[in-house]
Image 1 (cartoon, helix red, strand yellow):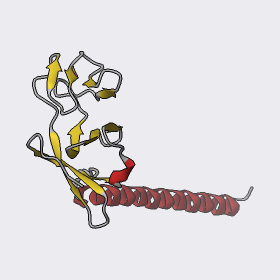
Image 2 (cartoon, rainbow, N blue to C red):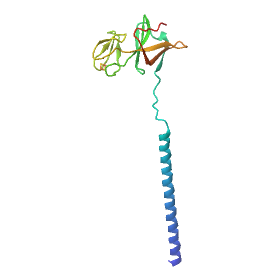
Image 3 (cartoon, rainbow, N blue to C red):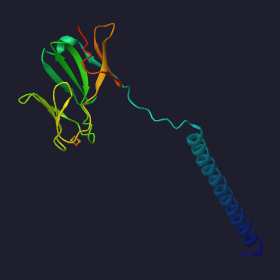
Image 4 (cartoon, rainbow, N blue to C red):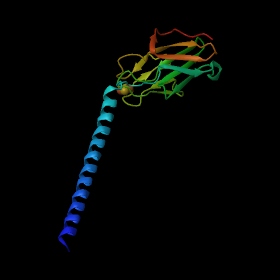
Length: 162
Ligand code: FES
């Protein structure tokens, strides 16, 4: 190999090495810029927790037979149709928050966790629950649907007459 070709090869290697480091540097800058952009977006976007609406559309009143207690597991409420009218109760036990269930054979609402029992109006019959099941505000929408607001409690015995 001649001295000139060795010099040419060395120059070629230097050029490749230079290109390699240039590309590595640009790649690193690109990754750092992308990371900074993601971090800045997360930092600047509002840290908001989106919760489902407390208002529930429970459908038409005639879908609840007279003297029925219907549990809506998804929203955690009982919809009760008594002869006095409609009302909505929280189905969440006031002891430690377990979901209660209606026992039609006994005519009571029972908590499976520690044995609290409530009557159909949510009054405690027995067990460790410290308070009755709260009543929620109910009303009829313009379309005639039963609406329940889980964020607003009302006094007991406030029936919605339809
Ligand atoms: S959570 Fe219902 S009795 Fe304890």
